Length: 105
Image (tube, rainbow, N blue to C red):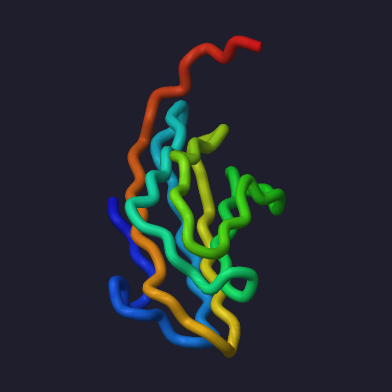
């Protein structure tokens, strides 16, 4: 699937909070690919949570190229929060499910 910040590719609004819960089949992982990422640096951010934990895998802000992010389980949460100041074009990401192969330490 493909997801975007509100109004993308136009600027998102101030004081926005969005949450995406991505679940794929048991025994699979979620892989996120950001096609575009441009937020107000420091004030607006995307947080990515692996599975049902409250630990973030990534905190993203500003304008950047984002490497693919892969979960360790079949679930991932993505949150977007903007503050009351500057806005920007936002982001677009897509996700796929991928096979959990044998992990090698």
